[in-house]
Image (cartoon, rainbow over all chains, first blue to last red; front, side, top):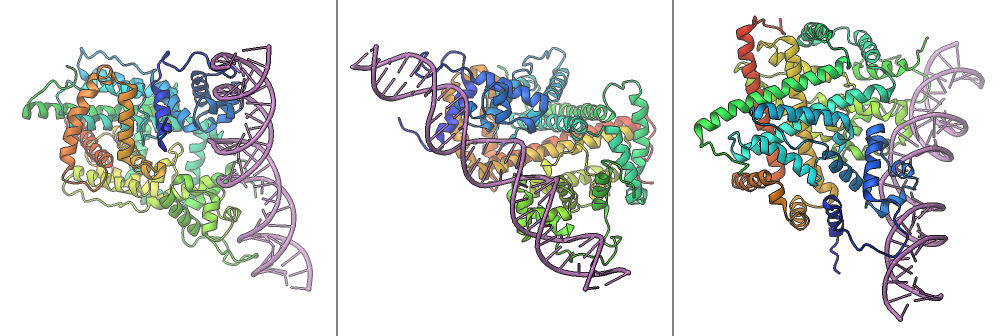
Length: 280
Length: 280
DNA sequence: ACGCATCTCTTTACGCTGTAAGGATACCAG
DNA sequence: CTGGTATCCTTACAGCGTAAAGAGATGCGT
């Protein structure tokens, strides 16, 4: 057997990502029976990351949760970064893949974005996984397929469509990222949100007493907008103000983008031929 | 002097962020002359992060660059995370604060977004700084003020305006994040982009030969869009395809959002009273 | 049934991180 | 000159990912 330098790794990680239930190697091998398997390790990793955040995810942490040492994991998984990739693709399976487009693409995409938002808040650590070389697991593709299916028939030309989707993805991701960061700030630092802001604004007036002169537009906006936000938030009150505002900004931004898409669809299907691209 | 638990830190970091050239303590103090100062340390930190990335930014790295040990820095800066905050606010000063709105807000915002994009590509590590509790330094406020000044007069109501701005910020951030991650992937892993993708797609056909059946919409889109991207990219060719596409998706997404804003402005100034909020 | 190849899992170790603690040295006010 | 204070260094600790080597269990070929 020939092994090319650096290829064994890629091969192994792909086979881990795409492995099916059977299709494994020989049923009986020499050596002690494995008392662990990749799925247990992935599940435990997800549990650790969900409960204590990405920073607390260490090989030792996962290992001891399974009653094993850190090094024992290396029998099943080539490295920590591979484990994270596997965890990523694993949780991605939670996302729905079917959306009702009978009322048009817009409600479907909105529902999709809401689900993605909830998903990110459920697994905030996913937002910490680098997108540089995407994981390319089955569930990553399934997620993409879902969006392409919804948006494929609206009449955007392929290249444009792909860019719109990329923008949509990154928008959702970015908004969810700040939301989760806000949520994590309080437990991590031990200082509750309100206290922190109160303290900071007190120090602001001390260190930057000329704030209103230096940043007039900002000062004007803050005084009016904060007031409006307060009175508006009176109805809800479940989550913190910051989180509520994050959610609200997400909705607003999403609507802006979808308005833009609608406008693009109108001009596109006017000017160019309206091919029902995507689903055959 | 009374020191409340946990407050000394906040006070110190605010004074570091907002300190002005003079206004420092007594000119002559006992003890050896400081051979370093906060600005040198910040500048060195920025240099390290720019050149080698956030992962390579360690107290030891900064220290030895200054011909000192890691611990020497703790005389000037309370902790690494404070240093990162200071670095963040420092580089933020590079962003322009004045934009020509004589041709309307849209070209101004577009120029602003382009500058932000270039800024993030120049200092990718900034995207790694948590937004949970924003740095609240002078330059962070200046950046916000800039956008509010541009968008303050278009006739969005304050609360809506704030959310639009939040969405805009996160969109730019998110798009820039993937772009920088792509750019860093090749040097970090040592595998050039094309090789990686070639290898991956070869493995894809091996491990998921049923790809086209499982993800029909995706397969259709890829075959048409990739072709279009290739022929379109033939003109340029400076940056890699991935990076080019990231930039393109950024433009497309931004235009979608701005289209949405235009629509919102039209309906807002029709229905509600058009107050020239913001700049007085 | 035996020996051996092979597999799982543990122990130990290395270099890296942020930073707490304590000591050496340089400097200024009295 | 002396005492107090500030700068800076050395040492040390707990944590990280993982390389290397070895212990023990297991199935196969003989």
